[in-house]
Length: 531
Image 1: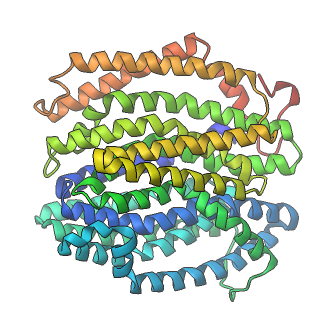
Image 2 (image 1 turned 90 degrees about the vertical axis):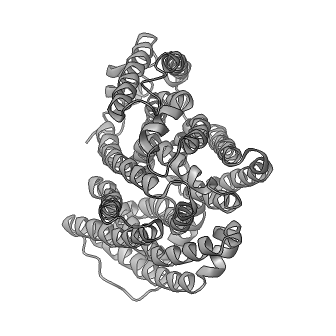
Image 3 (image 1 turned 30 degrees about the vertical axis):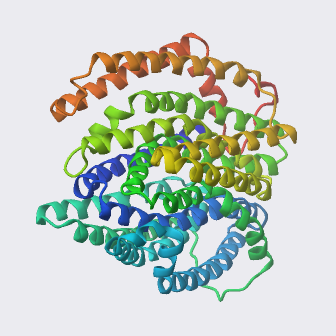
């Protein structure tokens, strides 16, 4: 399967998940708005979700995958199965102990870590504790699912792990539809959603477990032992977990800060949901596929193939991300109005969330590039350097968030996040170049300015079009009119961007197809690396 097809497989499944996520958030916004129960649910869900990201996107998509792939290559499938059983035994035990400890200390954690600002509202605080207690077992399920997803990715079976998250959104949509049908109040809806989150964890775990068995690997439970393989994994996993979950660490810190202002937590979450669509579809797809491919090329001594994989991945991500970033910057308000503005989500909520979303647009290229740069370190089993840079970005985020939040509210936190993201991206790229781990690629360097130009022209066109289409995009227009107008505007913007990108030489379909079509088992031709 070609690299572009692998991107498409993961990206398509992620896109499906994000679309269902939009539906979920739209229904949730109508049911909860940006009120106290919305803040309580979002803060409670972010807590286990942060740990999920630390284990999933950090440890097991970064440390486990290269080691599992190495076991396959050196010891065959039997060795890989033995290694996975060793890891499973330790991971399962740790997760059980962690879950019990967190459940027992949840009031303390919410009071000190998650949302100290909620203490001024006893009911909101109590609801947050209750919801977090219900949802925290979701972490254990998703961490085990992430390990199995890493196994599937190493075996070039990307679909099951990518499609599993869709079921979180399907289950929560079903819960919200039932709540609407029964006319439930906000508190009841929040608790029903929490039980839905926990149930979705078991469903997702079952999906990837079945997929692993179908791939020919049956994992049995072994008594937890810190074997040499497990110790090596832990050495790599701790910094990788911090690095891979840095965005979630920042979000948890920012949730803590934002809890001091009514509605700020929910506003940030709603904006993040829209912003996660391009980030998830492009960034996660590239990171998921690039790491095992890059690790394989480096182990085989195919340095030029590795350079080409990195350059073509960056080219691909920027080609799709720059127009998305420009669109979020200039058309955030009509997007938020269409997706969320109904029920308890008021026009005032739309203005606040759209402002935050526009700021996020400026940081989108940075966060996507981070996902393309980090595999260059992890594939070389260097998890320490990205961890250090992640720590620097956390310091930058916290400093700016504490400084800006009192004056700018949620927008100040959004600014802090994007600045931290760009700091991280620049440090990662600069280090790859300095170490000689990033091959010189003239086509990439010449295409980036042209893609930026195409995105800038597209943004200007959208800006003037929105001014002309004031009524069809306003809250006064019927939903069908708003949806149709926005869809037509997006289609026109795509024509402008892609037209300029291809006309200026910023993109070329033949070039993309040639450079991305690489079989996993074959090294790239040396002469064509920079075509």
